Amino acid sequence: MSAATAMAYSHCERVTRTRARNFYYGIRLLPPRKRASMCALYAMARRIDDAGDGPDLECQDRPRAPSGLERAERDAKLAELAEIRASLALLARGAQQPSAVPPGDPVLVALADTTQHFPIPLEALNELVEGCEWDLSGRKYATFEELVGYCRRVAGSIGRLSLAIYEPTQPAEAEPLADALGVALQLTNILRDLIEDRDRMGRVYLPAEDLARFGIGPDLSGTTDDLTALICFETGRASEWYERGLSLLPLLDWRSQACTATLAGIYRHLLDRIRRDPAAVLRGRLSLPPLEKAAVAARALAGRAP
Image (cartoon, rainbow, N blue to C red):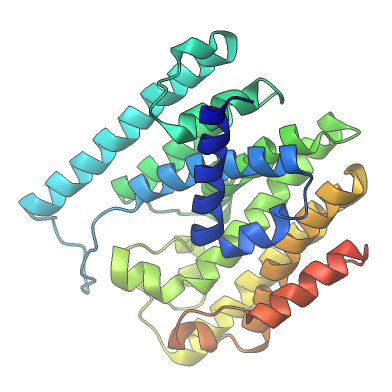
């Protein structure tokens, strides 16, 4: 490995360690080559996600037309995502011709090197870009099936990318399970950030059919009892996706299994906390303390279910 490539990987690891502590709890259990490659994947995913975090929008009782500034911000974000799509096209070309990748971009350099060692499905990164474009467009989800489609793009895609590095024994069987686990993780994120997403970004991801079922308005207006009932209902759905997705674990080697079980375990514990006290989501953003995360990682290393 050249010095420039090693520095590129170091950059990606710093991004992962500082921006994705839950994710890093898991991937630090991988052997060096796989850990470095997972950091390269995360750094690109982080870049895409940052581009997709559009302007903060005020939440009002009814949708309002964005101001010129907000439209300009959205346009800038969409242009940024378009540039990322172009860089992914370069990356795909670099998988066959490494010199096509710009040497000054450490994320692209590390990811290009990763494609030389693992069969990375780069089209999954384009799916993640599409999910972020949906965010910027203010897309709403009428049904749970539509929401699952979004979750597959922004989180299931990461599961499928990770599989290329994990190298499971039965890839065809593992892929839909990795996708399902991604859906479970994203549903947990949506529940955890329910109020923050609404207040900060003007986004409500939960499907309209579910909101209506519990008497909740499209802006999450409703009684605390109705909101907590809705949240409990959605935790049940997320739990079903975890049950399916965790069937992936036996198909992985023990280090990849420990990595996946750690990340899934942290988010599953978070979901359990929401299920036990759904009103806590309405009071602020939930997180697990470091000691609890460390305990989850220890269980995963011991081969115990998350």
